[in-house]
Length: 190
Image (tube, rainbow, N blue to C red; front, side, top):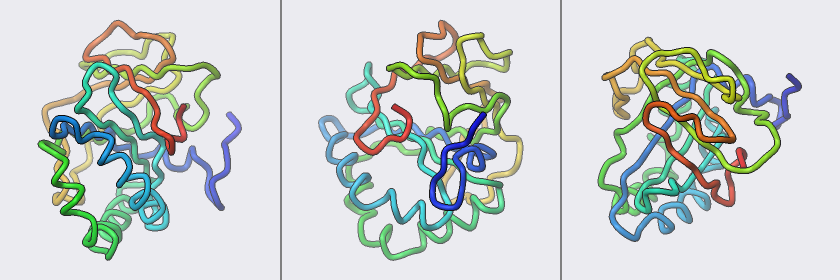
């Protein structure tokens, strides 16, 4: 697989540790959070060492915002999160962001089984399935499993009710909890 460039890094470098973050928002406030997120939070997180692969609206749930953030390692995840969440941008905008949210703790910490987030196949539509551990369906272009390492940034909880398999596809996967996602303006995965 040819890796796409992002600055001096490649996307595939950031597929080592992935956060799949699914937020439940107050009714009618999703676009408000997306606008704030895309305007204020993308570049500072990237500068801190995170890579934001995808920002999405969940089609079936008008009050869900789903996003993917990748890191090169657990140690780099900890450093990047500390830099961003203890930094000035988050301090300035956290109250506005948090005011849109009911729950931000539906987070899976994942590691790759089959790489491919950085270079999805051509097409439109993105389907994500969260399932008990199982082999990836043939249609999955990327597959992940729960990262067993301890959460090194406990200020941001991650789910501990797994293990899970998580698959990404251009077509419905027909397994587990399936999300159909619509990319926002700044999403790299389209």
